[in-house]
Length: 212
Image 1 (spheres, helix red, strand yellow):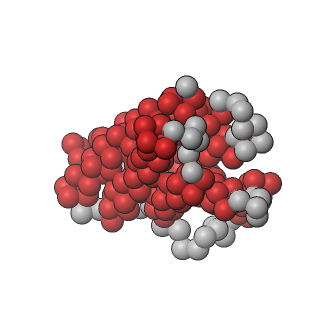
Image 2 (image 1 turned 90 degrees about the vertical axis):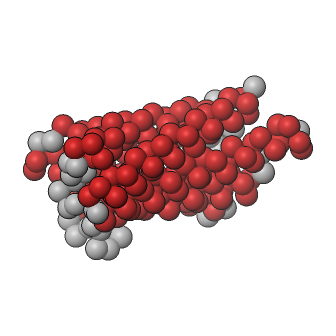
Image 3 (image 1 turned 180 degrees about the vertical axis):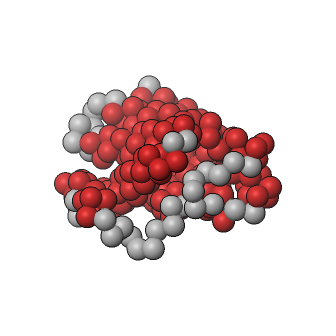
């Protein structure tokens, strides 16, 4: 039952990611913004990551019937999503992996406890958490500078994605729990929060952030 629910949520995540990616692409076509192009790549990557995990689970449910998805499929899907998270963070014009600010650099320490060198997936989730936390903090700082309400939604969406990755890691500690389902649902909620500000771009040509 849990695997079937995860399968449905991954399909929903795929659809939501592709829709937002398509809207971002329309915005890029309308504005020529490099940031929107990066966001297009980001959301397509996130959607494709969901699709990879959905496909693996679908094969297991209807073909292999082992009751669990192959670990490499899960890892590959998460890795593709991490590429998307990088593009989201890069939309804030990162010049290096960590910012010069000591305050922002400190977020690199926060997820170190997540890293387990036994599992590549754990390392990838840790990188995802760092990128998403960076993007969320940068967006909050841009809100204080510009007072645009959409920045709050973007920050909340990024934090939801970060929490989803954290819960996904914690699922390894309690593998019999429903944490993985909650993780996927939280990430979808984060995408939906990002959907609202992104949909305004093709219609009004507003800026997603101050660097567009």
